[in-house]
Every structure is written in C-alpha cells, then in structure tokens.
Image (cartoon, rainbow, N blue to C red; front, side, top):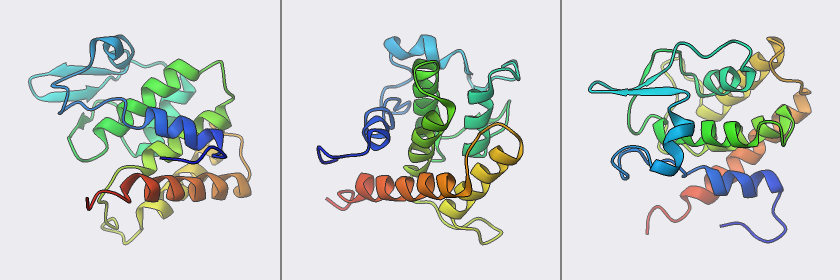
Length: 170
C-alpha cells in the first residue's frame, strides 16, 4: 500500500482506516466492540452516535466535527460509517501516545478515504470541506495547527485517498 519511506501518519492511516467494516462483519468485531460502543449505540434503526460523550473528550468531538456528523445521528453505510468508526478506534487507542495534531492528521486521512463523494449541495468539494472543517477546529480551539499544518494534513489525505482507491477498478 505504501512504500517503506512512508510518512508515519500515512502508515497509521493505512493500518486503521478499514479496521471497522460494519456491513461486511455483520456488526462489530468482538475485539473492537468495547471501544466502538463507547461512542455509538446499535438499535434496530441502525448505528447511532451517542449523545452522552463529555465535552472534555475533545478528540471525539473533533473527530465528529471533522466527519461532519452530529451527536444522535444515525450512521448509514456508504456515507462514512466504517471510516468514522475506524477513526474513533484509532483516537481511543492512540490518545495519550500521540499529540492531538498527530492524531488529527491521521483522522484527516481516514476521513479522506471515504470513497465516491461528490461536491455538496453548496458546490464545495470533499477535500475543500475537509480543509474548512480543520480550520474550524482551530478557530474553536480544538486543534493547535497553522494553516500550513492544515494544508499538509489535507494534502496527505488526498495522497492517501488516491492510493486507497487506485485499485478499485480491478
């Protein structure tokens, strides 16, 4: 997937981005269920983002914002469900081992790996929206990053997404 000289954030993104495959695995793998169910509930209606995650869990709320999701939202297949849950597993497991900017750099790549997206109704392209959401996290004080850092994160996410989908036609 990546060469041996790869950026460590790309390597972590490659390891974590497909960790959760809800539809294929018919739910959550037992090894991941304990982590995933900290953040979502499963009901007959689907997978719901929990509404009781404290504001002090900044990385959860930053990840939620970066994906454009809301507390209580039902996550649908093919709209980022697997990528979001994979990102939450990454955040939960690596929090305390990496700084917030490094964590969000990987989360940005994972968000960027959601395939087959089109511009929004407002005409904004997915990676432009990703840039705007990162800027918003900085403006909200949830992420310490310069504009150059943000551009680097988005550039890395584009590179990662292109590598991820390059063999889809096969």
